[in-house]
Length: 486
Image (cartoon, rainbow, N blue to C red; front, side):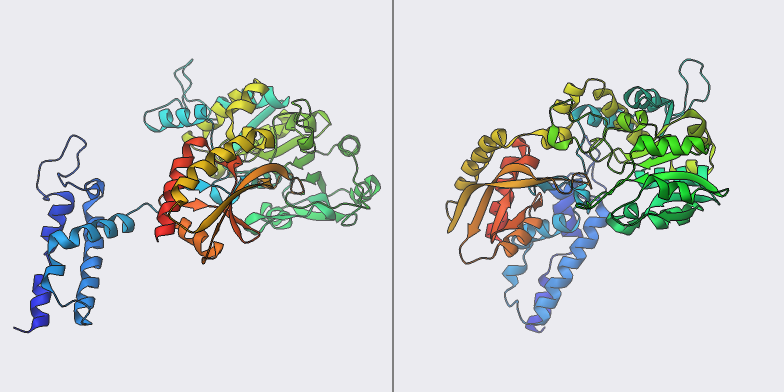
């Protein structure tokens, strides 16, 4: 028998590895229904573990064939087991998982946007683990409407006559236009034909809805007379669109909502406004004057807009949803559209949305309990001591490494298309590792457990406490330690 052949035979069998990882296939389960393996892999599905073990053993065979392994002792199961365990757990880790957001971008579109309030999390957990009255009227014992769980709350918070919620704001815009304007023209200012994340363009969603775009005005200036001149027999509606991630400044002009509303009413047309991010709180009344440029949905409807659409998961701070609110005659037509069924929200979204909306019944409570609002409204003076606390913890982790850790003022961002020109003053914890680029350390942090997303400024890796909960500080420190050793 050749030496190489004896090495191949020394590899542990698949069954031996699986039994060590997750217990015998026919063994009695534990109290949670899992195998009797002694390692963390016991909680993983056996077929997934088997595939990962086969991949690992195949790599071992390749190493033997290449002459990289010459000692049978290296192939003994007790020797290989720690490596196999780490390999399997990494390979079987869920693809969709929690990350730590240290970027300072509050409504981070790529990181799941707004985290939910504790009340919303509790509501989702309850709805997920049991049956519910999703479409069941408890008063009559007959079929009910899923919209009833949130419609009255939306009406109360916005002053709308009627409302419904769909699966996101793009769907809300599409459904509104399809229901009210299909086959006819919708008048929109050229300065509002925006594109937001994911190449979502207003002209294209209008085309998909079956309506015809009628551009008026110029990029920077559109006058009431431009809208008036565009109205004709085939006009279905006037529409305003939130500029989202950009602003036009300088020589600009747009008609007031009240002016557009009066014009629309003279021609018996609806005035539709897509608020994009949307807000349910009067920021100026709450003392947040820097955020007052973002109008609350109630203010928009009070100005004469007939139908307004906005997101549930951005400034509002709830789950992904699109909210449509306004005059009952238009909302009822939207509800009856067959497309509505394809765009409706599920029970988990409804549970989270209702819990979030309930908090808004007390604006002061909403500011305290909804994470996005709390983070947006936090001042730099309260962030500074949290930055010191984080820095003190990280210094212990960084003690063995040649690096510098400093605190300096910086700026956070709201994100989510809201307030694109507004900086939120903050304090940053900045790390410079001698002999290593911040890019390589940032990449290593993305592979840590849990992954950490940070930002680079002035050739330093920066952590912004604005988007970090104090309970995440030890997790960040552990992840940083993993990344540095890697």
